[in-house]
Image (cartoon, rainbow over all chains, first blue to last red; front, side, top):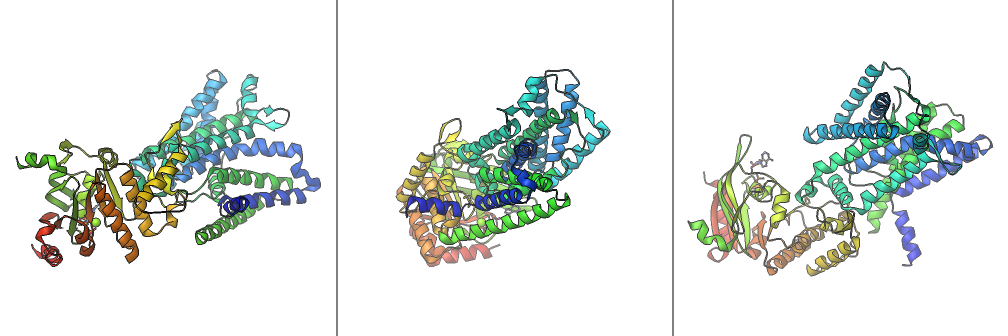
Length: 327
Length: 252
Ligand SMILES: Nc1ncnc2c1ncn2[C@@H]1O[C@H](COP(=O)(O)OP(=O)(O)OP(=O)(O)O)[C@@H](O)[C@H]1O
Ligand SMILES: [Mg+2]
């Protein structure tokens, strides 16, 4: 077999292939059908990269966690709670980077709490995080009165350009963060021993435990990664809109699951890779943006999400079968 | 004391082990020992307590009463980690491997060599995995194959290669031949002989007396949480052994 053939074969049998196809097809469709090809207009790409990356970063964390076999349905609520925490820390007139660090601490704690309920309480994370999803959203609504509240961070240009600036003239820094987090999580997952523990935990927790892996700690760390990313995104959002919004992140939990699943991550854990999750996250953000550009009514978003999910899951199952048949 | 005199020969000695699962009295004061380099067949009817006994040794369960001596020293085994640190490795049917992970990731699971910053040394893992499998007589195409793509016999080979590679002192085989084809069973029995040749002690649990009679040097028969018989192979024929197992299950 020539080398080229083997690369091709590897691509064919990769679970990320279906998401890659979906991704390309959507770009073509959006470009062709948007008025004057506006989808590829630099202004729109800027919006997509800046705004879409907020969700995409969180989806990376959700995918990372899903590889351990756990869910986090509370991502949107952690996000809004962290936004509120940011607002409160901001009110203390601290340095904004300190405010961000404290907010990240809150996010990590909320992640840890999800982990504790799941791991120590031995409750499925689906249920545990369904609980915390309602809890944090509800508490935030209560504390904030559900009102928008100004949080003007423009006094610190360094902070704004750290989270809401551009690289060069064009490239939104949010997209850079998305890529940076994607690379960091990808390296952890694929190259480090922690990564092997994560896969082992998701694939066969009994075996992992028998081999001396502390699966509870692995899960705790992964839940905390999700919390930290949500907190970071809370910072990004506030620096973009300069206010706290009580409805932020609503519906993100299922979109995040969708991003992971179309990216080839198994709901049962143990299967998935960062490039797939990355593309899946980006694709979900892109669908929302593309449909807006096409001036298609918002409810169609869900129709497209639905079709994309079903198509990519069916095709990755098909690919999987081919893969075993070839071996 | 009798135990101390024999201590030097024994790699494992479990004394008066008791275990309750709620109201189930699973182990009722079991004594068990395993000599260096010895292979013991652990036999008995379903629910006799075989798995429970070895799971206490492998750190999966903690005994309610009783002591464990390993390599002459009294030890406390609270987790699989503790057991593994002592050199106790377990090969369960379908349980000890992560099916979607590659062969080399499985062999090094939990003990991955690193190059720094926690980055795994994949090249080393791949080479050593292939070498360990080859030592067992298993030639697999690539260390990157996920374990699901292997036959049942090959999977047991991976688990056993792992135990040998990490210089286990005691390998526990809990029904390693269950659900395998005749050819695969023979492969696995050959792997167990390799464990013996390496001088590693092992405990072999099975319901198939033919398999165990060929390989083990001593047989321990359990029934309803108690040890009923402890005989050397030279003192029993295969027929005697089968009768012992059946009778033990019937005795009240
Ligand atoms: N985790 C557990 N919780 C409750 N009861 C258990 C547990 N594990 C084992 N038991 C009970 O303890 C007793 C001994 O079980 P064990 O699995 O040790 O038997 P075994 O000899 O390995 O049987 P088999 O040959 O069927 O594997 C049985 O009555 C079983 O139901
Ligand atoms: Mg058993």
